[in-house]
Image (cartoon, rainbow over all chains, first blue to last red; front, side):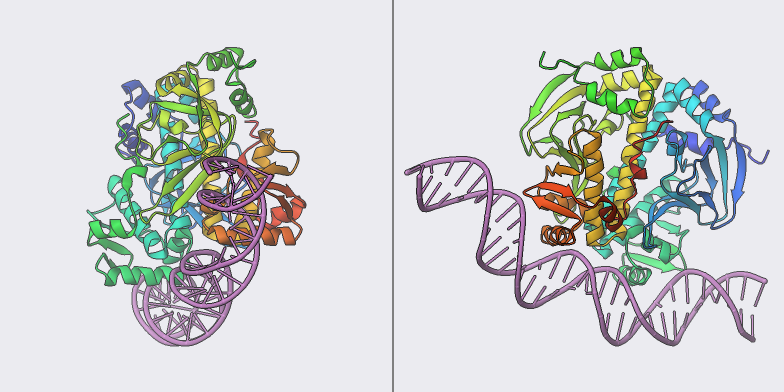
Length: 244
Length: 244
DNA sequence: CGGTCGTTTGATTACGATCAAACGAAGTGG
DNA sequence: CCACTTCGTTTGATCGTAATCAAACGACCG
């Protein structure tokens, strides 16, 4: 046993921010059949078109979901960190409509999709908690549609830095408003629908304006109020506080 | 009684394309407490920031979800038609993170959120069917992120016309590849992240290329193969055929 | 100490935005 | 029935943001 606590501790903590779980529910989650797998940086967990037979819960490391367009451009759809189920939809939808790739060396708990489905159906509280999780996922996608659809380059990048800051904090991966970006500027660009060259210029400008400072890939937000405004950022869509 | 069939017939038909429901489940759905409301064109069903106490199932007409950015731009997030639950997430998430507005005069069945939540928890098959519905919703949002993030104007508009064509067909609102757009070009523009002027030019070009023809707001797709290619369209993300 | 990958900077281009105005259809009131 | 208004569509001219092309720089690694 490599884990003093269960592999699902992070997940349970996350779910309980939103839904109350009974002891029996917690124990049922912890009893989920699973195997621990580790993925080297750059590995794919799921590829567009796969029929995955299992679901991955990230334990350490970072991952993203993305799609490739007909002419080869990549759009990153979301970033994921420890404690998150990456492809929950695969437990119910049969065929993957996008790919999932890890940035860094990553450990994950791999759960058979039927086990997860049965648990959700058998224990309504767990089903609800996971449903809420997918609803929040969808809320983040909606905000990203707005980000790439209607914000200029400066706001897009600022918005993403704000989102990452809050999510990293919630996952205990940030030191206040300082965190290390797990991805390259090219990947940032693919998340906000810009070119890497332009993302670089925007980051430089945000630093010159005194909103952030940078050291390698470590971002420090120097002025939360102003970057929040620059990014037109309102954290409501993250639903970090749904006390139902 | 204005309806020879129940108000939920369209919803049930839609859900059963993906999930098998027992007779008891169907009857439980039809027994949901609800009231029929009609909304005049342009009315809001939900406003960003509301705490809605009920969920709307569209019976006739069209609606969209949207957000407004800090500097007043609008991004439409999705279009909705008869048989769709518009704000399912409100039955579980407390606070609306976007607005819902109808285009045309619209009738809807308004269901108290607690009734819907209790039904989903009490009848796992219904909970699963609705969960799948929200997962498909999320899949469409992902495709829209790609559309506005990484496709040029011609592909964006073509892609949206493809999506609308298939969804209208599935909802029995299209005559083959001919359907009437329920929205203005300005609203199309807000859905694809362009200006109305430019959408107009793209539509004109698509017509000149022989991919579509237009008469008022009626769109006829003349060459499905070519517009599909122009829009980089792959219907898999709609999950119209998940036979679980 | 090369070699690779990611970051940074500069010069030019292009796609879609913006500004402006005419046109057309549907609805209203005299 | 016909002015008149309103809203949406269409077309033209110009502008600006971000893309593209190109190259140097810097960090990390074997």
